Length: 67
Image (cartoon, rainbow, N blue to C red):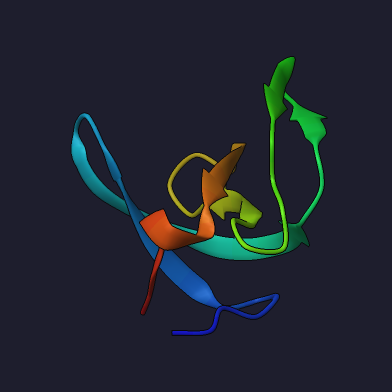
């Protein structure tokens, strides 16, 4: 599965699955919302925006499902 910028994706939360949009792929260490993430080419992260709240978060690509 390949995720591209703008794709609708879903991910798991403690309240169940939620949906949003993939905004930006990260493949090197970065900070988001005061947290550090160790992304790499082999283990990329995506900045995603929740459809429900509009909040952005970082998630591993492997935890996202394209919808």
